[in-house]
Image (cartoon, rainbow, N blue to C red; front, side, top):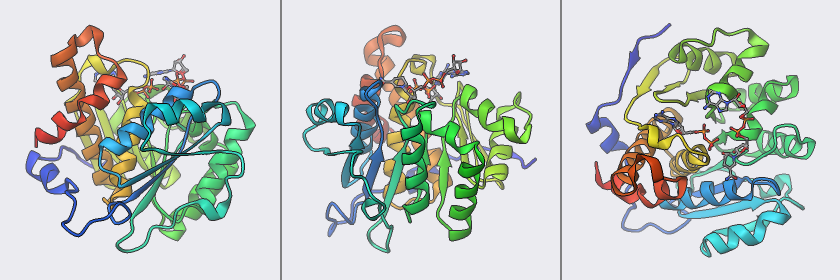
Length: 288
Ligand SMILES: NC(=O)C1=CN([C@@H]2O[C@H](COP(=O)(O)OP(=O)(O)OC[C@H]3O[C@@H](n4cnc5c(N)ncnc54)[C@H](O)[C@@H]3O)[C@@H](O)[C@H]2O)[C@@H](O)CC1
Ligand SMILES: Nc1ncnc2c1ncn2[C@@H]1O[C@H](COP(=O)(O)OP(=O)(O)O)[C@@H](O)[C@H]1O
């Protein structure tokens, strides 16, 4: 296994995607989030608003029809569409000067067949980086999921996965990967699936199959439902702004951890919620 390293503060600062003077909303990056369900509409709000706060120029949330009104009301500047009618041609193509990325799976029910076909559509047709989270992760372990990931790898379209320990263990199963050491697990998932893997927990380990990066700035205040959806939106926004996928995952996880700490300072470790973490993203950005 490769050595485990951490990014320095200077390395992270250099990665911050400050808007250029001539920027417009499209050159700053389009985040295309396919997220939420009738069961978990809140996950779509959390991922979408976290993406906006992390700098995506244009955030489009495609969600379940039952979730559309809630997502519109949580942030009027989100562009909201329904899953119904989502077609291959709607999915983003990243071009020079017009970066874009997809986030898929926050708030998906892992056992729902309709969500699995949405995941397949995104993996097959998004010619841009895709971040897979939450209920979409289980889809990757199937033979069809693995085949689509291989195709993305061959096409040079990066895929980032952000499993918590339970989800990482499910990804490990088909390949019988050892799950106890999370640095090793991130490395093994990255190699087995051809992805950039961020295994989340009290410490987060990110690997592209070559390097392994440890991020240990978090706080147990983050151990609350919905903070993973916030992280997915944040890393997705950095991918949408054209960052290299390993850098996006490490910077996103660090900003998320610092936002967690800033939220905790205001709200206490007991009271902090995922929404407070989003509100603290500006403080995390200023900390660099
Ligand atoms: N407000 C919302 O709408 C929320 C929606 N969420 C969505 O709910 C769906 C299901 O996600 P869940 O994570 O709740 O369900 P999972 O199906 O991933 O969790 C089920 C089992 O996984 C294991 N597990 C869960 N978290 C773990 C951890 N951090 N470490 C080790 N083992 C763990 C436990 O055995 C748990 O019973 C996802 O699509 C997610 O995005 C959650 O993010 C919570 C908030
Ligand atoms: N004890 C902890 N210390 C530091 N960070 C934590 C701790 N527990 C959870 N986190 C962070 O909180 C987030 C939780 O993500 P996840 O389990 O996917 O939440 P959810 O599915 O409810 O959105 C991850 O970024 C994880 O690293």
